[in-house]
Image (cartoon, rainbow, N blue to C red; front, side, top):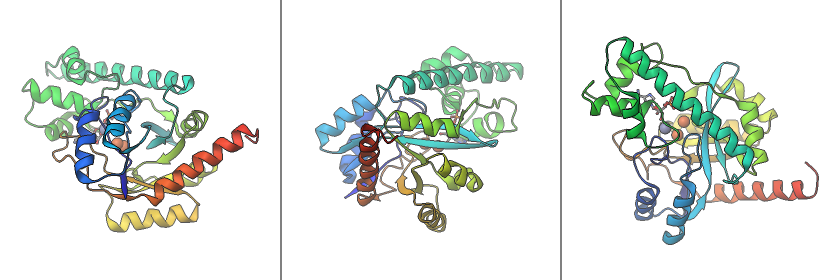
Length: 281
Ligand code: AMP
Ligand code: ZN
Ligand code: FE
Ligand code: FE
């Protein structure tokens, strides 16, 4: 039995619907899935329904963009209550940040005579948490550049003319937000962010786990983070970070996290619930 705990749908910057992801996961033989769209839990209801039909266990989730000591890092939230009002308020705030950022990116493109229209990006994104991949797709669609990669390389990535930094949640506050919503906080793809020095501070703030297995982690990188997880008594997670067809390959199926890790995650959620109801927290 195995799981994929890092998936994106068209509720953020993936191209698949929740139903399409589940159909693919079913064909690949997955027992459990988590949806981790950027800054939203909107897709979870449909994904849960599709998983129930396919007899796949579903874990509610989201991926939050956060920062600590000027380092950007992504935090995966698992088992959060999708109706938790504080969580929903904060997510709505960061969705607004994303929408305003799209307008700013488009304004910068317009300033260098690239006639992209913000409403075309919003129409294509058709979600509350739009991001740079949507800008890139809209540019390709409008024939303003040849490929998604070209859009990032020439305009959208850091130190390029249309790069706009994103206001981020403090990582320590994000961990607290996830916990008060009943969830576990997991550091996503540490091998990509290269911010290992922040791990002790996150652990002190209650970080629950670390994503050791990720499509872009080499075997050596995974082993390194397994060791770090062990040192700090952190849970281990893994996922493909599937974005549908937006990154060429669908990726789902590339990471098969052994189900024992899901059992450990559920055990921690249950323990935390018990200590909260007993008034120990
Ligand atoms: P954003 O949340 O708006 O900052 O966009 C981040 C998303 O853009 C993530 O899903 C990244 O994987 C994707 N991304 C970042 N750099 C590139 C790139 N060079 N080509 C394609 N996608 C990228
Ligand atoms: Zn993404
Ligand atoms: Fe990420
Ligand atoms: Fe992701």
